[in-house]
Image 1 (cartoon, rainbow, N blue to C red):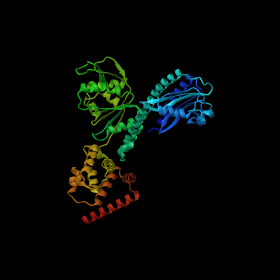
Image 2: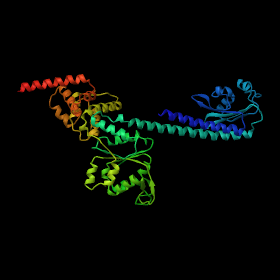
Image 3: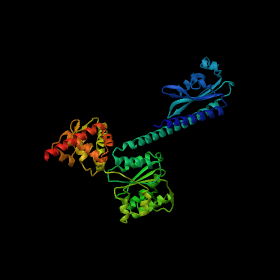
Image 4: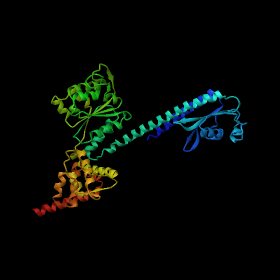
Length: 483
């Protein structure tokens, strides 16, 4: 949790306690005062008035006997002449600090005493009266309600910050797994646009992680404290989508039994992620263009325009430019949405990331299943060779299924249930074959850059050179024998 925010919460509650105590001392014309709360089984002074700074946080300056009795009896106490009272007059604090009159009232929270508010006088034995006691008791009960509210608000605020921090941690860039050149391009572009409010268009096949990128942009940007709202736009009836996005007025259509706030209003100040934007109708396109141009929406059946301030991140698995060329999408809206385009590569275009993704998904599965499993080189080779039409989403499902169905602590080719694995299981290959295939695939993906290839594979550059020379020599030998 954000430690500075937690400190701010404590300061806010402390200011309230100081204000309550100052009112009590001034209204009762007392010399000194304190608010004492029960914390971890002990009584601690949490606010004080006119007490020496060096002892303001302890009970030594107060009549601790009166404080403890008010707590134990849950009743207010008034003592006109403390020094003459046999119950309290011999106490060291009373004698030392020449306390003459005291009023002490319990602070209740849900019928439970959480502490007391205490004031005293050292100059006038008749300063406090029975009427003062009744008033002070009522004041203490009201003060306790205010303290309870402040505590509850602080707890809710801390919970909100904790959830926000968890969201930010969950949607960090580090949670988007990838070291391939194509993913590095994506990361670089994300870093350049995440602190701005410009519209971003995410293009990529289904399952490539477009919503994951949208969330990372939001939770790492200036709107992170505001809502992140998503809406899937594909295969939805125009009337339903229009009502969801813009809201509606009571009676505007059958079933509209009350005014409804649309998602644009809910997302006000934050980010709105529109998934499969290419599928929206011309009517919705026109209304969305107005939001982007003027920052205004109008609920269905309403004449009143409402202002909204949202950042739009849209996504599509089609070529939006192609949709414009086919006259299925407004060109002016396309340019409003397409300020920055982030193209997410298909998994088959970044095969070097597959081992990283597999290990990550296995770790996630192990945390849920309490059992660590490893994948064999043959199985990993099958995953690297597979085309992955469902992209990362399909890979996640494959690993989760293999984790559940595999016996023991090893996942092999037969546990994967993908076509490539079935073909691979029909032919015998050595571990060296798998090693060579993976290295050469990664080397090709990095454009024959050996340094980047070695870093991606987690091996030394010297080892990579040795292996490449070894395989090249073997290939030349085979060609010589064949000739």
